[in-house]
Image (cartoon, rainbow, N blue to C red; front, side, top):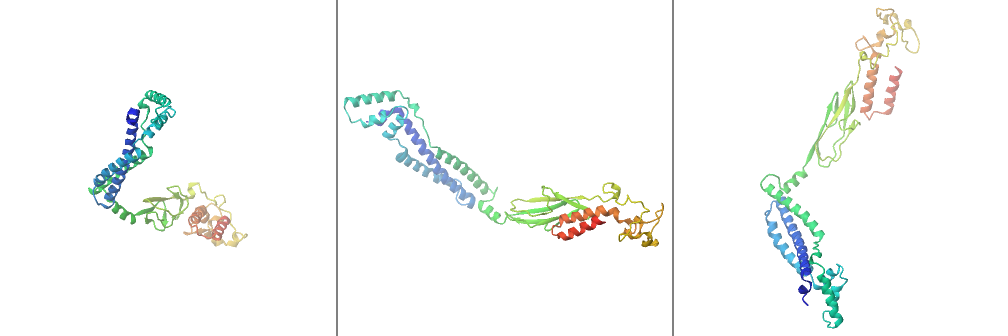
Length: 342
């Protein structure tokens, strides 16, 4: 019994399916070999860009033929079983099993099987190439093309060879730069060269006199910071704002303005202007001297009342406490108590 004569067009469809499967696997082998040679060419500069195809195509063709002969070439049982899946209820398999039987029952079974096969169009047998080799071949094709382009570009001097990139990567470093906006400075290395994936050294933003730190331009608000796992160049800015210190602004105000010029501020919890001594009192031209205009209350130039700048220096000290995280708590508490008692 000739399987080609029995199954006709159905058999041809399954032969085509076997050829397609073998060809796809052959393509996988060809692309794999080509990718290996292309990678060697780009990474090391050895061989040639066409060498992978010269080796891969014959090797893939040989493997494709062997796969078809030993795996994907349809046998008569495989064809019969495949056809029976389309509603023939094992008529084809039974016909093959009874092909040596000359009995009337066997003849009737063969006639029924041929009739059922004749009513099944050959186009009903779909060609189903394996999905796995198609997916693998697609990935390898993209990889091979990419590697070939890289190899050609490296040979033309447009990009470095892979070995050169690896050598550069071993010595690769990035620059981390800290800048300031306003009155302040960076305590620590403001410009650092950091190796790939390494950590930068710690820096701290410190405000100048009359300024206070308000945060970094990337949203961080802690004055002290350290960049970790650096993989790119970085520029980070510390921002400072000026502290209002002019009593004329009306914002900070003059805490002593509520006191009449004639009032005397007693020291030591008691006493009077007589105890402070008449020589220590200046006349403001509006009445008797005392309190704000005592010589001992004027600092620096002998004409500036210390309470006019109390708020300014209080904010200045607070800014230092925020920036200098290593100041002992007892020192901070001492100064807060001092300013609160003035």
